[in-house]
Structures are given as C-alpha cells and as structure tokens.
Length: 353
Image (cartoon, rainbow, N blue to C red):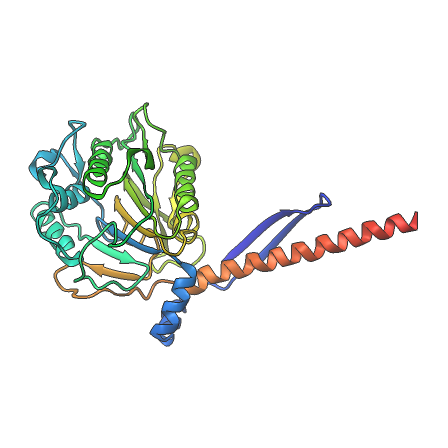
C-alpha cells in the first residue's frame, strides 16, 4: 500500500512525501486470529468511534434486483414506479401499509423476514454488518432508547436517467424510506438531505455524495442519530491497496461515474465511517449490487438460515487504517520539522545580511 501526501509549507515550498505500507492481504486474517477479542475490540473502537450498523441487500459477490411493481410489497408508491428488492422487503417488514409493526422485532427477525420475502423470486441474502458485535436477538432499532440528539439522514437515489443501464425504482426507494423515517422515527424533513437525478433535487454526483456524507459526519454530535440510504448501481474495481480478499474494492456508482469515477469502500470509510463521532448511532441501508462489505465494518451476520450470531469478519484489516493514520502523522511531523528548519534558515539569512 502506498500513501502519498502533497504538502505546501508556509515558506511556499512544495513537498511530496510517500510512505510505503506493507500489503496486509496475506497477513490480516492471521493478525486478527492472534489478536485477543478485547484487543481487537479496542483497536476497532479507535478506528470507528461511532456505533455503525449496515443492512445490505446481498453479499459482495451477489447482484441486487429491482422489483417491477412495489404494490406486491404493500408499500406506498409516491413515484408510481419500481423499487429495489432490498428496500422493498425491509419496508414490507417494518412499514407495510404505512404502519409500524405492532410487535417488537429483533435484528435477526427483521433480516430473516426479509430473506423469506425475497426467497421466492430473488437469490440475494440480506446481511448485517456492524462496528460493534451486536446481539442479533436484541430489538431492532434505528433510534436507540434514550437518544436525545438530532436525527439526520442522507438519502441517495440514482436512476441514471438517459444512460445505459437506467433504473426505474431508486427515487421511489428513497421517498419510501424518507416517509418511514419521518413517520415512524421522528426525523424532520429539514434534517434529511436527498440526492436524486430527477432535475429537482441536488444531483447525486460523486462530489455531492461525498460532500453530503462528510457533512453528516461533521454535523453529528454524541447522542445524535444518523441514517444513510443508497439505492442505485453498485460495482467493484481492482483493489488498489491490497486489503481485499477477492482483489476488488466494492463501489457506489454516482450519476457522473463516467467522468468522475466510482466511490470506493475505502472512500466511504474515510469520509463517513471513520470520522463519525463516538456517541452517534449510524444506520445504513445499501440497496445495490456487491454491497456486503461496502462500509468495511468488522462484524457480520448473514440471514442465510445457518448463521445464528454475529461474528468477526476476519477480512477486516485494522492495520490498514492504522497504517494510513501513522503514515500521515509521520508526514505531518516531517512537514513541521522541515517548515521549522526553513524558518530558521530564513532568520539566519536576515542576520547574514
């Protein structure tokens, strides 16, 4: 892994610093196995201060699917169009006919019911990943009991209007999720940012998506609740830092991907997951292909009918993220030292005159 930094000193000098980090692709599983649970949890909490949970529609190797008519899932249909299978299944469990369930459901019950709904026509298996090892038999929640802060959301729906591979249900997905968050969980419309390629909302370009996620992390404070929903194309590109077991980074595909490129899982960790403050609860729903580990979280549960508990994902690489922090800290220290020396030389030059 190569970490590069371009630094401009106060003297105007441009400095390029490159730090070569060893690839952990072949060693990260061994490192995690030899690390005790307590040590692993401590390192994870430093890397991911917030409690982050993500529901994804499928594993990294699977593709998600569109539902041709969301009426079969008893959902509101504000756009009169299709919806994503993952979003539609989740809302059938949690918001059928625009009503919250009368019973308290656990995480495993929510995901298992989603899988049962999808089983007839779809092969995708819902997954739950998390920054903490959750008891999947504990009650499902987006707003934990006792939460007292602001509830914010970023909702992204991309139909790729006019492009090859155009979708039809992604705006509908986000609108249904917005209604659910407001009507069931008390989110305020002013605290919900929507990015749709509909010519009316803010466009879901790469820069706009990253900016919205950065702001969500920056605005959140301890006690707050955050929610992110993405409905659109997902993909994968060759891994550029050696941390992926399959050799690929999972990606979100913004509306301007042809010119701006895709948003890697590493970017999502850098801009959203890592910076989210301690004391914040972030829930994400990723309804796209290849989304199983797109937030790079350390614990995973698959609703495959065989898994009973959430387990550690041995592919999670603590050294990767710690290494990047160390490299940039070293670069910053070098910057300060060189800048200080530059100032000393400037002072000496004055005395020489």
